[in-house]
Each structure stands twice: as structure tokens, then as C-alpha cells.
Amino acid sequence: MDFAGTLLHWYENNKRTLAFRGTKDPYKIWLSEIILQQTRVEQGLPYYHKFTEAYPTITDLANAHEDAVMRLWQGLGYYSRARNLHQTAKIVAKDYKGKFPKTYAEIAHLKGIGPYTAGAIASIAFDEKAAAVDGNVFRFLARYFGIAMPVPSEKGRKEFSALVLELMGNAKPGTFNQALIEFGALQCKPSPLCGTCAFNKTCYAFTKGKIAELPVKNKAAASKNRYFHYFIIKNKNEVILQQRTAKDIWQTLYEFPLVETAEPHLPTINVGTGPNPSPKERGNILGGQEILDYLVKKKQDLTPVGEPIKHILSHQNIYTSFYIVDIKGKLPNWSNGFTINLEKLDDYALPRVITLFLERNLLY
Image 1: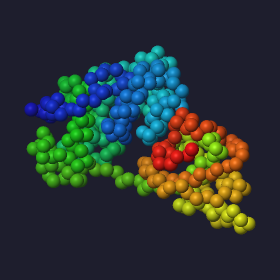
Image 2 (image 1 turned 45 degrees about the vertical axis):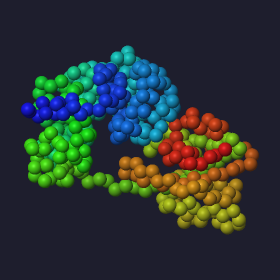
Image 3 (image 1 turned 90 degrees about the vertical axis):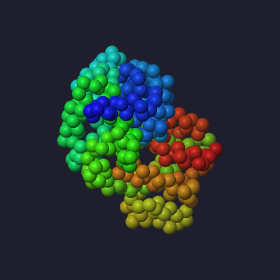
Image 4 (image 1 turned 30 degrees about the vertical axis):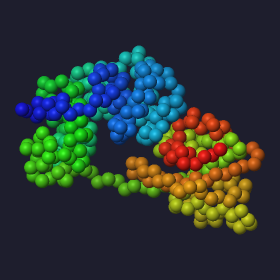
């Protein structure tokens, strides 16, 4: 049996039953691919169901308010995916009259859709002979053929895509691509199941003892530590929120007033007559000086609530501390802040670190 025959036989007997399998609807295929980027299937499936229930068609998604889309996405991370998803839905609704474009070339020009996603949609929905090369496919083929090219790279993507098309032959493109991806996800995992692998007799990495060396990966960038201090400034059942507007993590999400520092500690705030804070400590403040000045003026004695929460992102470690500040009287008015009732917090898309804190601590 040739490569394609062996792979497809394995797929028929081992593939998972997933909600988005078996559909030819490009909208649902696209939605599933975007949700599952950098997300485990078991984590992403509930979001797929929520989105298809809330927005059954791409036009429904296009007509939604961005805040509602972001709120539904909350907890998945990589929020640029949700923004691109919404913007692309608007483009398809307007420029294509709600009909998804049918060719790889057209699909790849849509915002937030890269070569892999375009290949998946074109092959599964429209039977176009296009490669869909994700990390699972890179890993499997690098090991099987002994390819030492760094993964991923633009040169590597092109060469692996050409290899996939060659291996595909006359097989159904959508089925073949899904089989490759599934094999990498279930069998040729980072810690592969070589003992039960249908390809172990002909796999380069297995027969040469080079499983740990393949695929070759580019050197990972060093992670940066960031220190966030969130101030829950409240008066009875009212609290201040602000929206993140800068081109940074969690863009367009909502949060409590934030002071970011270069070091773990928050600048000392003396409630007596001493300096507040010292010039050296002010140099530690990267953002939120207006908030800190307000707290100094109000002579707030600040003590973090609970343990700091560490949140790991791509190349960033976010260390968050939370402080509850009860204000007697009217809450302050900042240019980027607004006051809401605490019971309305669920109406806003919040970063996961904040929802974790709220799950652990009652505010009213």
C-alpha cells in the first residue's frame, strides 16, 4: 500500500468524530480552523458550538457587534483571531454577498487567513487540490522523510506544501489533508506512539533513532516578564472599567484601571507625610501614572488581594496583582475609564487573568 493508501486507511479507522467534520460549509470549516489555531480540540469545541449557535451564518457574524464577538471569544486567548474573524465576516458579507470565495487564491487574500487555513477551506469545502500544512503535518513529514529544515519557515512551508501535493496524488484533497493533520495530532505527536504507527517500518526518524531531533525548530525567542497591578476602584455596587486600545495584548478587551511596572513591586504609597512615591520608584512605572497619582491623593493603603496570578502568553509572562479600593463618594473620571454596575461585568469581554480573579474573589 502506498503512502496515501496507508494514511487514508489509518484515518478511516482512527479519526475522531468532531462536530465540524463532514460539513462542506466553508463558513463552519473556516470558523473551526480559526478557533482551533493554537487551541486544543477539547478546549475549542465548546466555542465552536457557541459561535454556530449565536451566528449560524457568516452574515449573522458580520452583523454582530464587536463587543459581543469578543465576549463570546473570552477565554480562548490570541484575541486578534476574533477581531480578524469578525472583520473578514464583514468583508465576505459586503464584497461577496455573504458567499465564501471558492478558490485558494481568493480565500488566502482574506484578513486573518494564512496559507494553512486557506488550504483547509479550499480543499475540504471546494475539493481544490491545495495543501493544508499545520504543525502536526510539519512534524509528521519531517520525521517520516528525515527533513532537517527548520519548522516553521517560509521556505519550509513551500517545500512541505509541494510534498503534500505530491503525496496526495489522486486522493480527495479534503480527506487527505484531514488525515495528515489527524495523524500528526493523534499518532505522530510531540511524544509519538511509534510502537503502533502504521509507518514505523519506513519512517526515517524511527528507523534511524532520530525522533528527538526531528522536526528541527528555530530557536525560541526569550520570554519577557511584565508586571500588571489592577485596581478595582469601587463604590458600593459600582466599579471603574477601561478598554485596552493600544496595539498590545488583549487589544479592545476591558479591564480594571492598570498600573504596569518594570519590576515586580508596586511603588510605595505612604499614607502619611513622606514622599509618594520616590523618584526612583516612579522610574519603575511603565503605565498608569494617572491612576497612581489618584491613589496617592486619596491616601489609599494598598494591599494585594489573594495571590498574584501568572499568565503565560507567547514570549510574555504576565504577573498580575489585584487591589480593591473602596471609595466613599463619586468615582473618579478618567479619559479612558467609565463606571458600570458590578452586576454588568459579564457583559464585557475581560482578559482571562481578570476572570480568574473574579472566580476566586467576590466583589459584592
